[in-house]
Length: 377
Image (cartoon, rainbow, N blue to C red; front, side, top):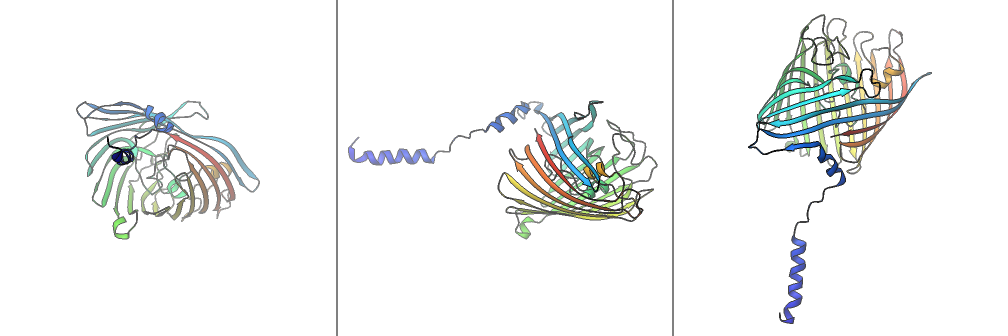
């Protein structure tokens, strides 16, 4: 090669090297989590995918109300199961929850047990034990919840159990999304409960406004729940499927732009039997410092028409077990994401106040501290 062309030749070699796409290198997390995929087939085989699923969530907590105090370790959720896709349009999920913190007995309950037919985005039918997804927190899986616990609104107006046996239909059509279902409100047990009480009807619809409002993500959703009257409603073990609300409403929204996300939820319910009417709202701004660190604030307000109509959320109730008629909570959280929501550490400082008109042991005014670890696959 003539010497005059050598510099040009070297320049072309360097340019071509920079123009090539570098190979994708899997992280140690990617390699470890990929082990949960047992089988990956093609669309021509009857089984397309089989995956091992699970989660482990535990907290260290310290809460106080005057002279009363509770602290220690809590095993929140220990679940394992299988999830798969078959015959292209069919899906299934089976997940079990275990009492690792107090294994007497070890098995706690079935959490997911359903089959889904999803031929396209507009038609998804699901039969079995599944999430009802009422209220904003209630429709958010514990896998991706930005707070240690769901709010008092979800605990009192929403569902008590994350999953309930029933039949649901859902889909997306452009900017519009929808969901409807019929579920049991019978006596709960570790499996599918007894279909011996009222029926729970649920309808939800919403619209994505991101393009109209110039945001990365924006939607508003309306949920409606109706429960027929029966003496066996809201009973069972380990806990009832739902509260005994004749009907309940939730108007919620989520808005994201840049590092900011704002979650809003306004709810009301009409009780039946001994269940009081309730109303409240939740305000939750979230700020991402970067891809690893996140700040969360939540304010919750909830009021009851009758005395003792409100239950405190988890750790508050371990300090003071009574109920009240007006509840407020201020939640300050810091989250550290190591592998997205699949591996994260959560820190929370909370102040809650429960007003108790009857003064029969439900009053609460105290601070709490929680450090939680979450892993899922």
